[in-house]
Image (cartoon, rainbow, N blue to C red; front, side, top):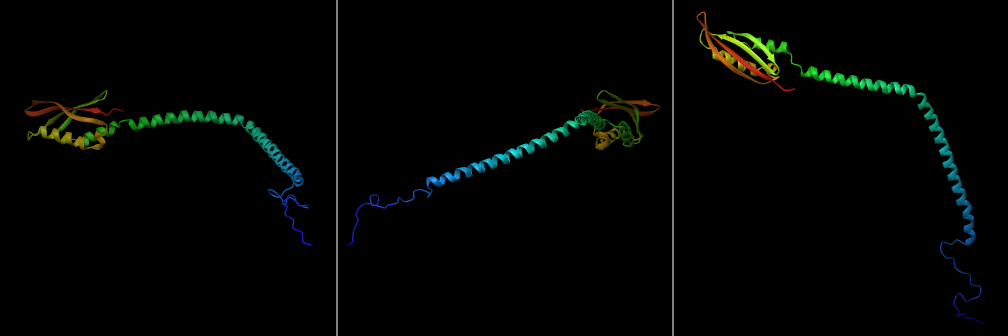
Length: 193
């Protein structure tokens, strides 16, 4: 005869519960605890060994560093002296760049000088450059000669580079021995440094 069991699955005899979740039974989970403990133990042992190794390396390097302490102090002293000397060298180089080569300036004055003009006095006081001179011209072109001389000096970049301006000052006409002589003064201000 055929039996039909209309009971639900839970009430039927011989029913085995289906696996729930990932399919692990509580007994099998107990096997993983020693495995996890073993892995953690290995990781801790590895970290301990790495720490001991790095600590020994640090001690070795620290001992070497201590051996070089006198040399390091000497080097620091040398670096301080070198820094002071290099500052002095920079200051002296700056002074050399800022100095005015007066022999070159006087040479340029004589090269730019037209015929008929001569110098009576060249002086420097403070930041002022003063040139006193005289002009004689048989064609009565004294003022033109002074203008040519002034223009030549202004165009000469090697002469004019250290001056902020160059101007004609007082002009006086005199007669000496039947010749008209014009005495003039030129002034220039040195560039501020």
